[in-house]
Image (cartoon, rainbow, N blue to C red; front, side, top):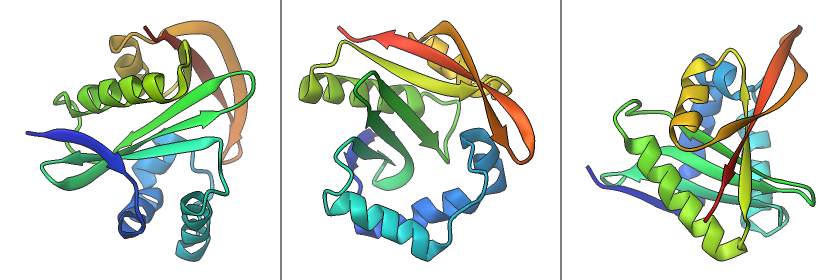
Length: 160
């Protein structure tokens, strides 16, 4: 199994949209109302055209096939990481992709730390980030998700 992270390109958009339409992934990632393909495509075209300078994304590729994505969203206060592994979970692929991504963003942007926000009820993702050196900050925010309050836990990782 060869894991790599590569630039996301327009040929990936259809698969990425299929993931957004997946009910299980919607709940895990907090997609309250999935976008239409046209809305989704427009958002990615804005990224490709450089209209989203605070966003940096990579595709997770396993043996030449797109299986996930990583993204970094930069704000003046904090840098947040997001991740979706749609296939081949619980076999080390996510950990390997995350390490590659953290190394790349550290080199590119020189940041000292990165944050992740994970829903408290998404125990698998919380365990994943903690296993990979992210530590809960103690901050919990509440978001509305499908008509209910859903706590969001903030985790932090120091980058060396």
